[in-house]
Structure formats: structure tokens, C-alpha cells
Length: 328
Image (cartoon, rainbow, N blue to C red; front, side):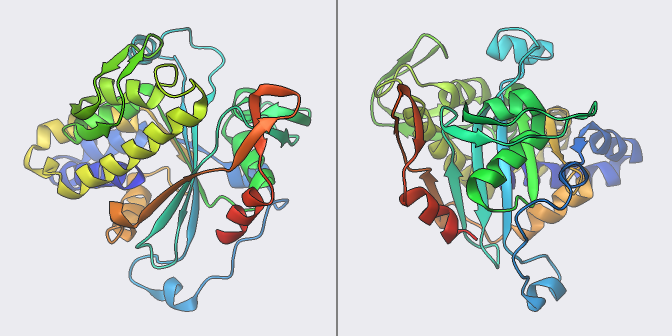
């Protein structure tokens, strides 16, 4: 998803500079930045030692860890239409730790079930003060109580891994990104009939537009046992499908369409301040040009039912710790 988003924005950047300076300015100022580094300070996991060769290369080539969140914010008319509800109480509906290996030609995407019970640390608030720490809290509550800063701090506490970057996209941004790619092709192994996401698909191969892809990413009640684990499998399938579409996309042949979609996507994007400009996003996209879908491994955090609540899960040990250690 990061690569697909980056390629869309990179193409729009080139077109914006060539066509008119205001297009670049508009797209650049659409992106919302959050200064996570300043908010969290130095009390964080250390960064790994960088390879000097990677530091001096024409394009960055060091390992990266990026927290990618899909927000279920209902703010704005388009988000309300796609997700329902009101504009209050947004949560991290989808959470993935994207570990990009040194050289940036392979990656591991670890999905964290939103129902995972975790130790949620005290997090600083933009208005001053801080949230209260909590034990046995649902993972997605971190975003609800403390926004991106608390989501990053909770993930770093859970994993022992420093997040180099943060990327958040909401309902409308995800749907528009899929549409920018011309849709995605997925193959489902069973019929899907989910009244919550309003998605009905027969088992087989389908070409999905943005609204359908978003519904698939949110589907849980129409598959398996109805838990979040089944939905994660669908989300991981979509990530690979989007990478494949990005690799074969011809969006640059349709400048007007590319600009319209880039405008919509950047308007739905929140990042840390290290990625909150088109130039920085394009630099990341260029550094990932050797990354293909075949070299992306998708896994789910190993979990087991929580001892006192079968509707929640907790990390399975030692498998969970071994997974995080492999990414440091």
C-alpha cells in the first residue's frame, strides 16, 4: 500500500511541477503531519545501527519500520457514506507494522489484531497532560484515547521496535487509492455475505473498485468465525493486490485523473513530520522501486484467546516475542 500510494503521489508531483506550481502547493498542503518524534522524546526503543554504505547511497537503503493505520474516522461526507456513524471516536480499524529490510527489496508486514489486549502506556496529549496507563486494554483503544502519538507509543511498547515513520489513511483515502490504480483483482476462497460491510461475493476471482475493496478490508462477519483474524487475511490479500497493480499501473498516461485522485488521497493522509511533504513521500517511493509483491511476506501477530475473555486475544509467547526480535 505504501508503494502504491507513493507512486500515485510521485506521479502527481511531477505533473504538478510541470503543469503549475499551485498544483504542487495544493497536494503538498493536503497532507496532515503529526510531530511524533517531538511528542515522545527520547524514551523510545533505539534505532538500529545504520550501514554506512546505505547512508551514502543515492537513494536511502537502510531498514525501516513503519506503522500503517487504517482509521475508521467518519469525519467528512465521503467517510460517513462509506462507513456510517458520526465524526467522533475514531479508532485504528487496521494496524500493520511494515518492516522494510536493508536494501529495501523485501519487506515483512505484521498485522496486529485490533482486539489484542495490551499494556497501553501513558501517552502525552496535544492539549497538555497525558493519558492514564492501562493494562489489558484493547490495542485499538490507544488511537481512540491518544491519537497517532499513543498508537506509536503502544506499538513500540508492545514490540520493542522503534517506528521510523507513521502513515494513516481513512476510509475515503483507501477507496480513492484503489480507484486511482484502476481497481484491484482478488480471489476469494469462499462466498462472502456480510451485512455489516454490505459486501456479497461468490467464491472466485473478482475485480473490485475502491468501495468494494474497502468493504472487503472491513469484512469479518461473513467469513470464518467472524473474528478479526479472518478480516486480517483479507486485508493482507489486498495489500499484495495493490502492490501488483502499482507495478503495472499506467496512471501517468491520464494526468487529469491522476491529479484528481492524488488530491483526494493526500486529503485523507496523516503522517509523521518526516513524511508530510510530497518530496519526502516521493523519496520513500523511489527507494522502494525494487520492492515487489513476491518479496513481501504477510504475517499476523501470533495470538491466543484471552484467559478471562474469549472475545479478546493476547500475544502468544514465545512466538510473538520471537517474531518481533526477528525484525529488530
